[in-house]
Image (cartoon, rainbow, N blue to C red):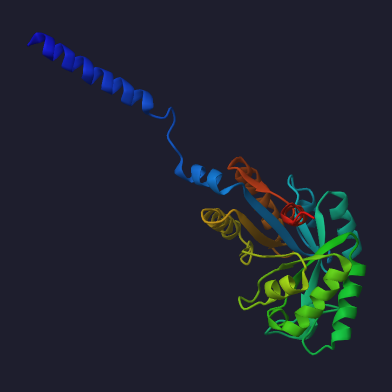
Length: 268
């Protein structure tokens, strides 16, 4: 009887040892496993409204990670901001003013694309805007909630982008936007904004938008977010600098739009 009990005790001890050795040395992070399965997490930050000596310009230019700088054409510091961003290693794109569903047309700024323009005039204005922003390799829309749902208008805009070798990022100011559809037909590389960072100019509000980015990454591998220089530009730059460091430590890679589009381009 003693031998039976001794053998039983040995089996129990052996089972416990095997079970213990099977346990992971560290707690398993389910989210990190999911991320590895779905690939690298990539964030692209676009900062709009350069070209007007806006607050936050210097702070954005000096960020530790590279962003995509959207410069409005025909403004007081358009050329200077574009050249400075390029020299700092940021991508430069044209922040093309386009007609909104509400507001006055003169609020858009010079050279704006409006739905009452002829095909020839739209193309002329897009060419002129590209010529006015040094080092531009892409374009996104400033406002544009009316223009980006107009197929004729966007086909003309994107036709010029194709001629000039530019990509287009839909700022997504209207959820009915047809930019992606037309860009695919015209064969212009395009992406779409997911989150605006600074509609409210407080640190708490901007920080909250970065938490929304993290939530977006639970379901997706890529997130594009747009911020601005201007009234809250310094606040955006301060929170952005801090969050870029923290998110990079969370294995979220910050990349410029052009590098992502290039890496995803089909091989010839």
